Image (cartoon, rainbow, N blue to C red; front, side, top):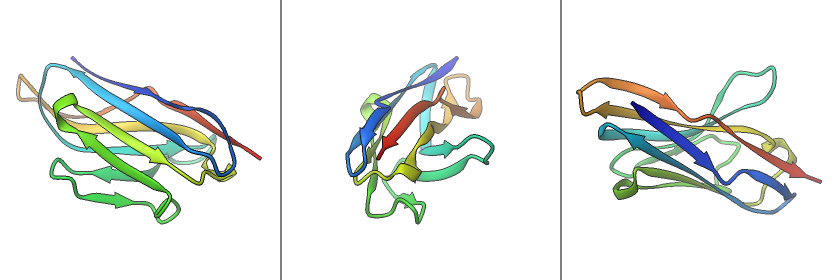
Length: 120
């Protein structure tokens, strides 16, 4: 059993910052790519940022220069530092991870989501 637990969402003013965290736990053998996605009501889930196990990163154009993804492999945790937040960043953020379990089963796992609200 593998779980991803997110934290760090909340309410912030325009131009402010938040840091999201997502910790993976359970019968984990190895974690490959980890990432953050977001989904507004009535819209498709969209990629925000991803990071490989080696540290290579990829960002959506809308967040480049404002958001930074990082990970701590020893803690099985991925972070998303969000700066210069805009009202359009308001939505639910989900983390995901590509994981091989101890039973050598591969799967893509998702967190439960955390709400980020940017007020003007």
